[in-house]
Amino acid sequence: MITLTLKKKPYTFPTRWGEFSPVLGQTFIRLSREMAMFETGIHSFDAFKVAITIAILGLREGKIPAFTEEFSENIFRLGEHFTFPYSIRQREDGSRVADITISLSENLLPTLRGVKGYSFLREPSGRMDCSLTAEQYIDSLELMQAYHTTHHVGALENMVQTLYPGIRKATADEVWAVYYNFRGIINWIRNIPSYALIFTTDEPEAQDGGQRRSPVGLASSIYSLAKAGYGDINTIKDLPLFSYLAILMQQTIESIRTLAASNMKPIQISERLHLPVDLVLQYSSK
Image (cartoon, rainbow, N blue to C red; front, side, top):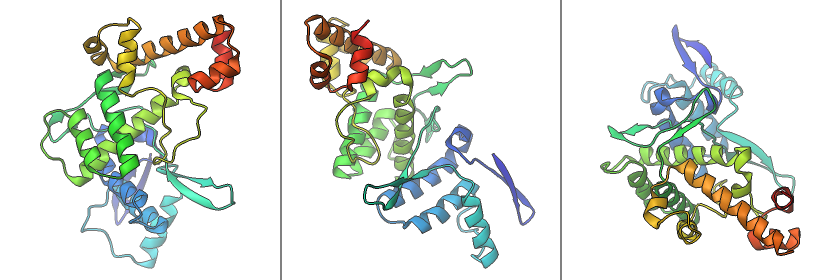
């Protein structure tokens, strides 16, 4: 966190995602709007950098100081301290492009308009607390992927209803915030090393807003687990998220070992299950 004094008023603001918490929920909502405007092509990159700096500082809209040369330079220099919410990627042709990158180990919007949502928090012990059910996770992930495919905001409005059951119509800024909040949480989970087996695929990364398509997390997985004897469909739908992911891990490991026992070669198992060969070798040899 950095504290800055502007016109004798102190402003404390985060410089990375790990410094955000629910206390900064309103800041996150404002920041989400700017990220959406950039990803949908409304903001240029230069306008985006200015907008996110103002949002992160928490300067009240309508009371932003005039853009004097001094103020503009301060905003520019502040932006250089941020390690979020974007990263610069170099394309194969040598050109550079900015991508929104978000990873959250905590739900920044535990409530929305007074409606309780889901808990998601990494405790100091390292234990994860999450109240998302398998069904909520699957439905929300499919709605997010539907948005990435169609760019229809209606999919995100349905996501809000899924994650905050019973909420009345959310504002456009709140819809974007729910989307980026969930997207950040999913990205954080996908980067947990112990889940590499179910979140890594040998298929090319899809161009879907920075989100990698996963071979799991779709509705078919519930029926697959039920068929494999892990419980009936309703029981699996109600599983806590991490219990569901643990079962998916176990099922995938069993699939690898079953195919390996049938003398199928690792490269063939890799092709059948759409997994990198190194992961297949890691589990087929045990």
